[in-house]
Image 1 (cartoon, rainbow, N blue to C red):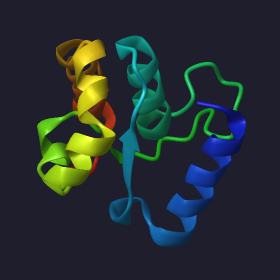
Image 2: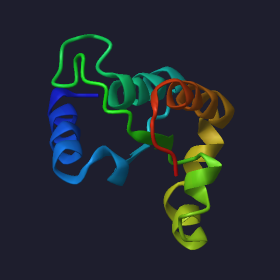
Image 3: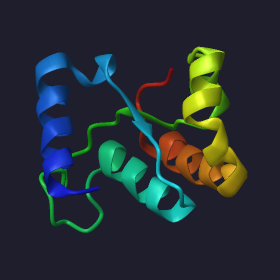
Image 4: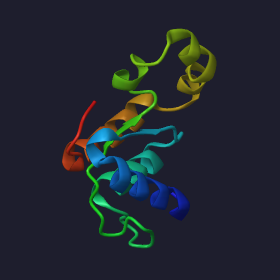
Length: 109
């Protein structure tokens, strides 16, 4: 997650409250998605960005997870996201994001 997005998320969490935010990821790789989830829950593990040492505990999900998928209009999901499901490892991504969410997120959908 780039430094600008880290700052945006930090600012939003301070303004709106962490309990009022949900981070929806869309990365195509499990490791990158897990790293992004870890960043918004437990803090930047590289200690390079605005979230270094900042544990926001945000609810964090990938767009292909069942909890998110059921909240999206089925026609929109089919048009915008379903193709991605054919070329990514949905199970690996879901498992990786869930691992960090379960460890560090204070909030859930």
